Image (spheres, rainbow, N blue to C red):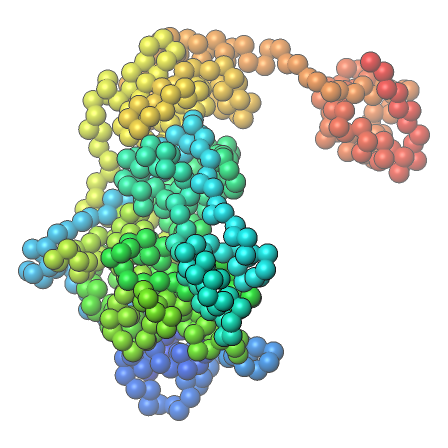
Length: 593
């Protein structure tokens, strides 16, 4: 069924009502709390289902022909998860919303007269590469976490959560913390990960504070930065990332964004105070709710939006109004009860959004409330991450997002290709900085404009030099024997370095640098010094062959001096002795200096 021709044939054979249910299953995804009623509600967005009374009947038919797999019932029989359309099938489907949401290749005259912003698929990858090198050169601590309140000792519901100090103090003084029912507390948006000094230094490179936080969170999620403080680069991951071209780097970062829990669109909305009159609240007595559970729920909402966007046709303009008309049905509430998987807390859930000054959840029937919550969330997904990643072009009217056009999102989200190409209207970056200004050398010193050379050039310099100075507009490298030796040890040959220089650097390699690299290459491996070694001496000329046959000695050999004398690492002695004894030998171990 994953054959594209078979999938298309099966879809074309469906009647309209079964297609409605198929669309609903794709949009709702594989969330564990999706019920048959949810599928029916979304499927009826395109018309009544008149063929069968139960939506499960339609789902069963889709399972029978292989376009879906059956859902399940939880052990208590409470939640029925409806059918699921696997990604392996979705990636073969045509854009399911192409015929049901209007899309056009050209904007209307009113829209085209507004402001257009075209996504750049190269820009964010270039900024990410520079931030990696800048933080590697000048490691930064993370911003300290919010101090823990003393009240945490007495109220378990405070453990691990950020809080509003004034609100918490007021609740304590008024006795609400011990009252029944338990009060709701505000969850403030987390502060930026990096301290203010680092933000001032790196924000110009990233394109602003919000983009810096997003890029840093992406690099943590992608494994380029290791967890913890100070910020530490993972060398192997960094080298592999920077060795990719910018479109491949963009694809890596986009896939990290789809799933990353350490950043959320909601935080950016709440940071927009006082313009955004929203507050995120949680019930103090719902002890099962932990911060990581909230982050998971927010990722689920992001996935809900991305599934809908990835079901739209590529390269076509879609108005936000047309998208919202459908999303009002798909996503009716912005709280933990959207797909409830437990019996309790069904009225408000453990967390929910509310208006400033109120403890009541937003009203799902109120259009203004939906626009403030879900509407702003969807706008942020499109005009924030997707635009920054070059996956969305934007059209504004009176300063507000009015329409968008996607490029490559479906290919990335449904894993149709490893690296989608840049849109046709976006040319590959052209070197606008003169070569002699992009790179300058003086003996063994290499000065570069970081944004004027590709990531592969930085990766090459990282193999042969040390980054001595790193600023937003100037990197200073110095040729380094240790870095070059490590590159040689990793299997990089001199010829490869010379070829990469000619391929990625805008100027020919200076003779002084070529001569020094050649000298190091000629000297490489002529003398090797080993430490912590052990000598094994055999009693006759045949024992070595026997030992290789019954132990792992061959895997540890550094040198065979003679048929009776070999050298192995000291760390291998214990395992070899155990293997020999298991094979019936009685080795004599002598510790001598």
